[in-house]
Image (cartoon, rainbow, N blue to C red):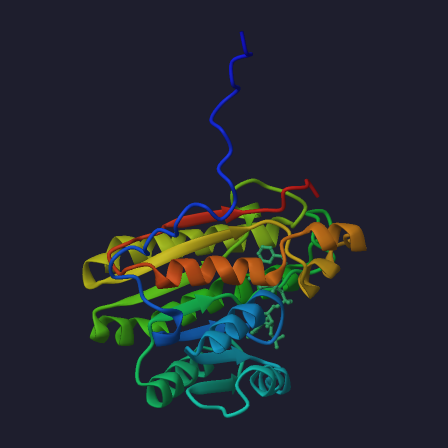
Length: 266
Ligand SMILES: NC(=O)c1ccc[n+]([C@@H]2O[C@H](COP(=O)([O-])OP(=O)(O)OC[C@H]3O[C@@H](n4cnc5c(N)ncnc54)[C@H](OP(=O)(O)O)[C@@H]3O)[C@@H](O)[C@H]2O)c1
């Protein structure tokens, strides 16, 4: 008698027809997407992915020359793009960014609230009060400014999606430090308020919780990851792919949270 099979027979690769996308899914090309912190790492990858898809894209970061380089590489025509050199911790500069995006792109479907940083001296026994304040300003206050600046436009449109890039450390404490974790927890609270207060106006909020991503930010760790770890970490475009997935779902779908991390512990 043959031995009983251990589970279903494997399906030959490529033999399963692709399922249709959910009704109402939007193509990335048809979206207008704003990204704070578009000059490096995750934000740059998100902007690059949407630029390559043909979307309208607005990027904000302090290093304007890097935003220009991003556009040179991915949309040299500059068609349907906005690049603003500005500080996301300064309300007026965020408001000017959103106003410019609205003026030049006509609307805004998605705001990827991503600008962030960490400091090397992050352990509680060394954390400097000025660094605490700076961490809260960039990782939390800036997210609040982006949210309030885009809210009137999202309300007028009756639709809009905020995607907040927080961190896995907002779910379980790790070595990223008290200020970083406190700020990222704060963004989770901010996103919850958006959902509670604004969903009835068609406005949605997703919180992403990435684990280690291969970007310059992790080089700020007291002990930077090894090249081997960085190779097996999430890559910026992995996070960008998650953003695209959420952004292209039908407007009736709320993805409240998404956690992603490298398979290999690090
Ligand atoms: N890398 C990771 O392992 C990881 C894991 C989880 C979550 N995250 C989060 O992912 C987000 C992006 O970080 P990343 O890893 O991609 O780091 P990154 O490569 O260092 O990029 C950080 C981005 O934030 C921008 N930024 C910083 N301060 C700003 C300010 N005051 N105004 C405007 N833009 C500002 C930077 O642009 P300028 O310097 O040009 O202003 C840069 O574009 C952050 O929120 C970070 O906390 C990262």
